[in-house]
Image: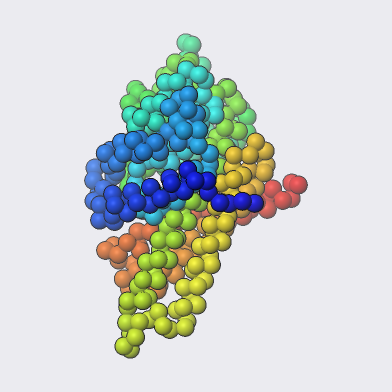
Length: 380
């Protein structure tokens, strides 16, 4: 399989690396993480100017008709800079749902607004106690005077505090664990009955607990077909997982470079510690793990656009499982090889490690996806 980037993709990659290096130094990122919103709206507008916010959308809706490999390039660069802006939630997850399940009116109204930087969204899907199950939805939406009344609670909604609108998964029929009967609704964040409690996560980003109490929406708030949202949600989450794998690879690459530089400069017994053979072997193992994770990232990025859902899920779960294991190994080794400094807040290594830890847990950890991959093999 050919994993070489096109000329346009190479230019995008180079431009993003220069942008992150110049505009997103670590101290700037640290200040943003401690700010009220936790990210920069000026940077978000710069992303819009660069065409990043419309990258995966059709040209007819202000986008660039990019594929998952293009998103991979963006997310790998974002991993290098530990970017805080809500790209995953707004563009990859919610933008992907609108692109794949929205009607013409919803696409014409919302996709250009996302691409232009004027609209942020968050996917309110997971609920307390559901772990990673996509079909475990207890939130209900009941028909009411030509519209819907939504009641329920959503947990750890990524970038929820910054969202202007929410895409809410609710059950319109069936029991709490049935695959069918799930629908999606576009809900205004400030609608009556919506309560948002935002908080910082361990990696410096933001999430929210959201409660919906008798939230009324019009009939045109329904996104996609009633009761049939599960396949669209699975596809969006698979794209989200692939994006996170790319971010993790970008982080691992940065950690490897930082660790190698430390081994070259830190001296002990009058010589750089990088001359010690045991540490050289550990550094080599980190590089091997990162390159193997990169290969799995490429595989997922190519396969996630497949119309075959089983093939897509198999590749995505394989990638998430291996990248999660590699991320844990590289992160822990980077911290240990930096010695006591590796766990301090002052050193960026600890921040990269925290983000890797969160990436492993998001949308299913390595063990969960190893089980999912095993199930797909047994189903063949």
